[in-house]
Length: 124
Image 1 (cartoon, rainbow, N blue to C red):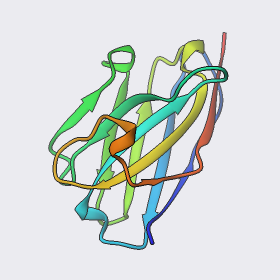
Image 2: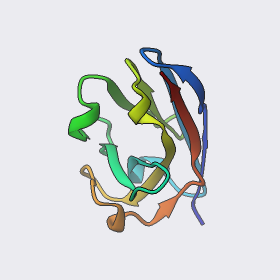
Image 3: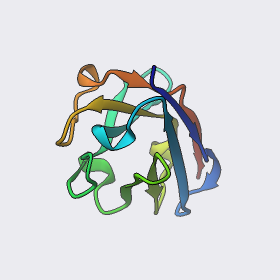
């Protein structure tokens, strides 16, 4: 059983920064590709960023390119999402996901495990 627990969400002003984390337990973390997704009220879940098992490859959604950075620490079983220059439209519940794979995975239906999510609110 793989469990994912996010933390680090909160309220931040537009232009500010926030880092959310996701700790994975239950299996060998290094075997899993990881991703971050977000869902705003009334909207569908959307892809934010993904990272390969090694951390050498990453993909980003166009709206966050140049502002967000995904990273992982395999020794700590943790994946991070550093969010800079935040905008009100970044407000959403951010969830991490895991899939046993080598490369990056960008489609939510391809992921096997999900966390509960952490709320990020950006005020204008």
